[in-house]
Image (cartoon, rainbow, N blue to C red; front, top):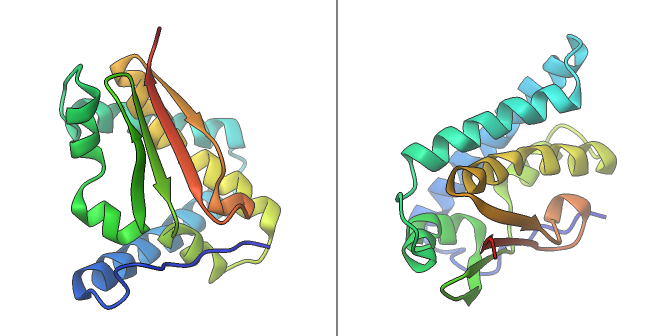
Length: 162
């Protein structure tokens, strides 16, 4: 069963507005992917397209730096923290761990389906955006637990290669 609960920032107007926009984005992603699959695209094709968008995002939306702490400030903005009820449990010169306790994308998907396998696949495919961004830095990306798989939180680990 998918557990998706925001615990913090619930009375914050900005957080609620940003979450509503992200839920809508989740609905669009769901519809686009569903129609792409119906039209004959494969999951690998969809993942490749999302990863390419992530590489672009890495080069154009995040600070181009070798400093993991500076990158973390550009990634885990106050807005993203509010939207996703996010936390940074680990931040060193070599590693940044981003933990998310609420996913508006999953909430959007749940408006259209309760197919837990499809949601898990869609969630993992959407994480190609972050995989691609880390690729643009030459850093490693590890996806641990995810809300989309029913874990109750998402854990993203970004590390400089040894």
